[in-house]
Image 1 (cartoon, one colour):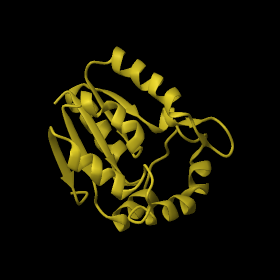
Image 2: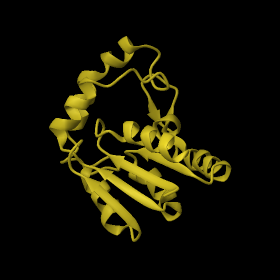
Image 3: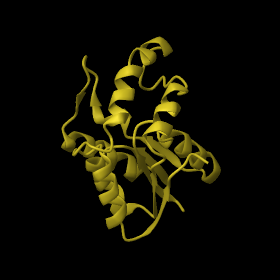
Image 4: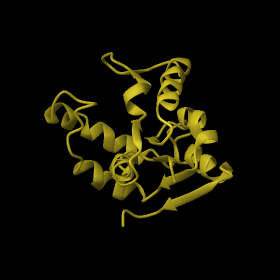
Amino acid sequence: MDRIVIFGNSGAGKSTLAKKYSAIYDLSHLDLDTLAWKKTVPPERKAIQESTVEINRFLSKNPRWVIEGCYADLLNIVLDSASKIIFLNPGTEACIENSKKRPWEPHKYASIEEQNQNLEMLIEWIKEYPVRNDEFSYKAHSKLYEEFPGEKEQFTSNQ
């Protein structure tokens, strides 16, 4: 287990599990949030080609890794290289509760206050997961999981 992809809804526990696996298995960790967005206000997605260059740079420097995110379009770039995928699918209520308890993410926000200002928006985003039809949706994540031919696991609770 040396190339793991973790995906699911916001608040599903992707970062927590990726950090745990990174430490246990000595894997390089890539959070796709760090390369998916331009540093603009409001945030704007980078072109997929730009993110692809950054992902490929990470892959070329790190033979053993865990990559996590909710971006089905970006995850598709690495799936052929993955030895295992993990779909975190604990349900929207668990994701909302996890988001309320989320520690400060300094790689995304300048302060905990700035992060908390986005909490209401994040909760609304989480609630839309089952009905959206975009690269962040349950539909897109289910498709990734179903079509992956290798080792895979789905967690439907945070236990």
